[in-house]
Image (tube, rainbow, N blue to C red; front, side, top):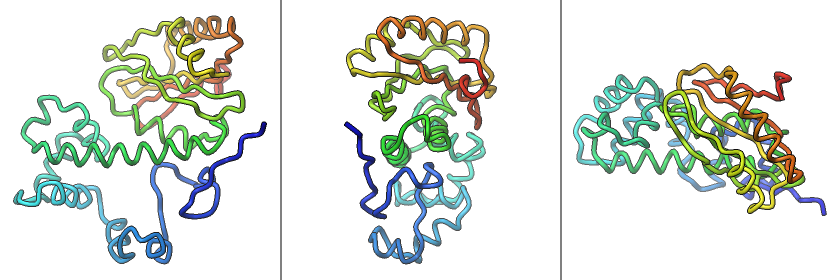
Length: 249
């Protein structure tokens, strides 16, 4: 049976046709029709730089905090980018201790909302056909992690996303992968295929020899159960490396 692509109730068109999955843009009329907030406020927010955007979140999270602009600038200075600030909030390590819990919660909610919107776009189309959207999603989820993570995107026989599973995490340059566990989870989900994903905290997404060997081991284990490894994507900094696209799979 052919699976029908979900549609976006806000636009009346397939969600997968959006050009950029990392965020949603609406025109002035569209914003008013959807009813999120006045179009003038939407356009004002879209026109702000990262520091001003972060300052608004600080002010919303901690209304009584004085000097939200200064707080935003300090956070950006400490963590480099807006994405780095969101990643730091997720880790909640010593570097985050001086800041209010309410701000951390606000940033986590915004980050999770963005991730869910991106995942919804992925679920609306075949995963291998969603290149830019897939890579934007993986960048949101993994690019700023300080240790290696292994994720597996399981798909059905039509290559629609079934589940994104975090299989494990390790150190700054290694995360253990157990092919048997990758396959076992796929069987539980009745998956027909999978995409391996891991990050390189160093920022260089080029695969190592051990990455290639690990991929081959998972391919062999999955083949026993007629499960196909469709790709292995490595995320590093703001870039991704597809073993399939480079002819290494």
